[in-house]
Length: 636
Image 1 (tube, helix red, strand yellow):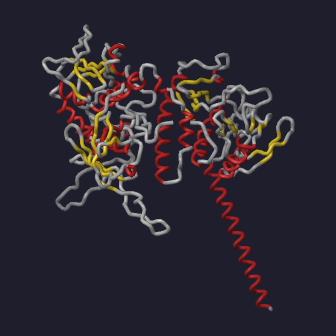
Image 2 (cartoon, one colour):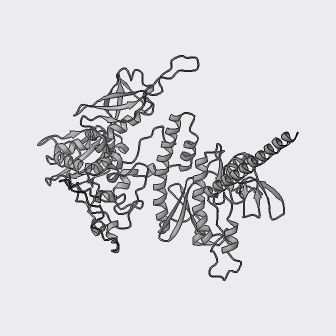
Image 3 (cartoon, rainbow, N blue to C red):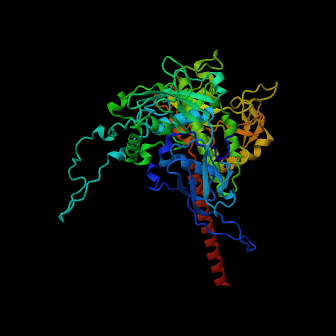
């Protein structure tokens, strides 16, 4: 499970502070009324939230920065503010101290003794690890505009481009004349032009360096790793000078290596260059770097931050129309092929995560207080965003045939895959499960309904009921379903045991029941307005199920109760099937499948309308009884 307050792995939001920062470097993190509360007995307690100005002393210029914070914020939030603020970009590997004592990054400010009375923190630069050095290089490349365009499976060309930049606000005309209508010069009868849906191309951003990449001498040999060498970089400045840089645990320095000679020792002539941050070192090496870097920040600041930088924990939408220049713009960048190593390391071990355990552990976090719920939702949002990116990349590789199947002897649509600890299958009827419901058409719709069902169950947040992370990806005409691996789903059961613990095992022929699933499934069905009902198996044995027979329950080896196949959590639209899916299979107008599942919103709306009818009838009965009693009293 990620640590509490785990740092964001994204670097795209690093420059969000351009528009939000003040001239003196202050940044507002949160706000609150700071009002004190009293308990039942009238005794004063610690204020629920207190907002104050926090000063952070820095080892380099501007030597200090001020941040408005609240006592309910975590120290990790302060770190992120420092990383995002323009005048403190260079800091990425550091810790904070208060009164000479190091502060844990994952605690709230209220837990730091005397922080409100003495709001002064000291930033101390830490030694780098290899992972921190790699992430520092990735972050610096994006900050200085050297990362170029990415060939990414998740984002398309000009992803996140906004049409708002092309909107021009006309200045009002003076002289007391009446302003003309904004559409006065438009011909409303003229056919529309598709170019109006295309964003205007922007001028190229200023280049701060010609190239920055990993050196051909990378990675360091084992004997030099013992001496603190982490990476070897190669930089070409705007002046055309080429420098070889050693990433050391103490920082970055220029070494004596050349294209043909390896010498990672510090270069002393004509001058020794060393800095803890790579940005600071680039400023020492190139006189043109700092002025152009300031121009780059001004260039980024001309647009709204929401249009310039990718939002955290989100995948930007790619437009269908892009300028020809964007489609043909492809710059040489050696580091483009090196980024997988920079992000995940040589053995790629950092990307192999137990997604299911992270999902379920996050759901089990406390949610009693508002602060607990906020932290839980933030961590869940971050986790879903990282899982979505991983699952999309894996699904694209599955669709392109680059991942070997676990069951190669089966038909293509029945094959299953595992890549990056994500389980993949095709959204098609490979094993005949939906043969009577429409085959591949029904299976394709069922996968989409399953994602909606998972979303609904997650929103209900039923205690003791868990769902796997589920993603549906449409790529190259194929629908691929990616799910986190539920522990025990591949377990070989003993003879006589079912693979599923609750619901239909093999369609409706074999039904499994389990006492442990009755209570959580009953709560789920109650929330979805589904009544408990009887189901008969092929042996004509009666089973009482709380949910649809298609909805399955699996008791994982981790002891958790998982609910699977949520495409039938609401009833079918029988009237639609009787009208549009005739019994004649040769009918061309016949609806292609039976997955006409009612939307939960419609079920809820129907319940409210029936409740309103019931209340209206009851009120009319009471009114009639009252009038009848009044008339009988008058007769007496």
